[in-house]
Amino acid sequence: MIFSSLFFIFIFLPVSLAAYYLLPRKWRNLCLFAFSLVFYAWGEPVYVFLMLFTAVFDYAVGALLERFSGRPALRRAVLVFGICVNLGMLAWFKYAALFVSTANSIFSLSLPVPAAALPIGISFYTFESISYSVDIYRGEARAQGNLVDFGTYISFFPHLISGPIIQYKEMRAQLRGRAESMEHVTEGALRFLHGLFKKVLLANNLALIADKVQYFGNPTALSAWLGALAFTFQIYFDFSGYTDMAIGLGRMFGFVLPENFNMPYSAQSASDFWRRWHMTLGRWFRDYLYIPLGGNRCSTVRLVRNLAVVWVLTGFWHGSSWNFAVWGAYWGFLIICEKLFLQKWLDRIPVFFRWLYAFLAAVVGWVFFSYTDIQKACGVVAAMFGFSGGSDALGVYTLMTGMPILLLAALFCTPYPAKLIRWLDQKGRGGLVVRCAGMTILFLFSIAALVDNSYNPFLYFRF
Image 1 (cartoon, rainbow, N blue to C red):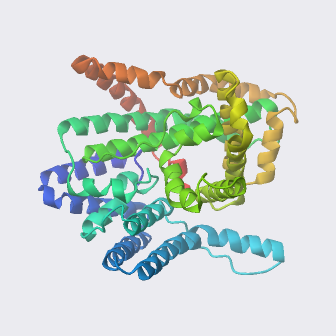
Image 2 (cartoon, one colour; image 1 turned 90 degrees about the vertical axis):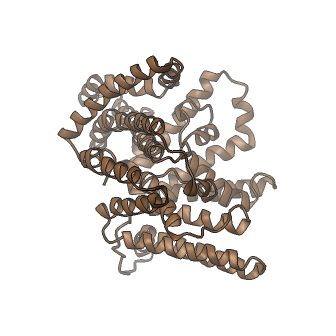
Image 3 (tube, rainbow, N blue to C red; image 1 turned 120 degrees about the horizontal axis):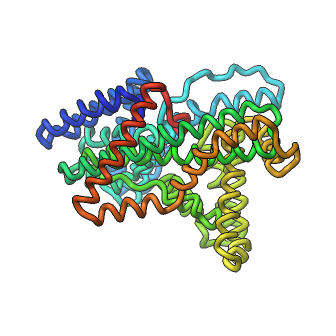
């Protein structure tokens, strides 16, 4: 089940909200847990049991970590075992086929390639499960004593499929007590509609351009740039649209979920971009890998090693093909260069050129992200910089027909729409009426688009 579907909007969401608020408070987490299982089982009727196993297993790990509080060696063994089981399941379902097929190709083997399908959301709920165990081990949180509450944390449907990645220590208090009101439901609904607009009216239309260029055999410079720019905007509006919808849904049920984006295409360096893009993933790698490795308070050699490890793994987290490792290494290389010398030079040049560098770095990076064939990705990058002709008839036609949506996408990547919303919020009831009227119009356009094409999965579902 996806948020941008007519069934979810007009049946699942109203029914779940009504059931939630009609029940006494003590039953509401159980209600959320039940509806979250239905939500997940709708698309994964088998792997819902894998998610349930993960919840029960990590609940037990947390209980053992707390029980053995006076026995550090045993606690460490429990933590390591818990992390290994979680990462082992992720590795089997997500990476086993890649590693076996790669070994077959390199060593001329004929090992059977595992055919297990990738469970939706496993990359996200695995990281959340690990954060739970580590937070308890570090003494930053107490073990959850209620299995239903912990199951709600793992399976809560607004963030289950594609985040935001929520650390247990910031969710625990909300599981027991949270502010629930009609005002919060209204705020959440407006945020949800904002995300729906991003996904249905922006991302889906940008995908038409990006997909068209993907089918070009040998794109010219014009076609390559059109495809790269379209995908750059598409993935932002697709993923940030999902995040807006997730945060809005969480607010409807009284939860405050962490923000995941902060105008990433306004960044002025590669490091700045990743402080603004998928912020909860960056925070997870910082807190649970980068800092334990030594962070930046170490020698230059160790700093380079730490950053290289984190960024290659960040790339691999996104997908089970080698282009994601290349994509992660690409960002790691840029960030290492900035840490060592490049940032000092960037600080001396005008803001516009810092922005241009960061934006072009993102555009080129998304080429390696979007093409599983690394050789083809390199060909597209070469074409972008003029190594396969300037333009062609199809590229010119795509430019003429796609220019309006590209310009609209560029506008919505700036701070101005957010400033307009804040300005309306400051106008009290009148501003709220205007905002609601505008969102209603966008909602009607979005529904009209969904009636024509109701199946439009989010890009990050594959991760």
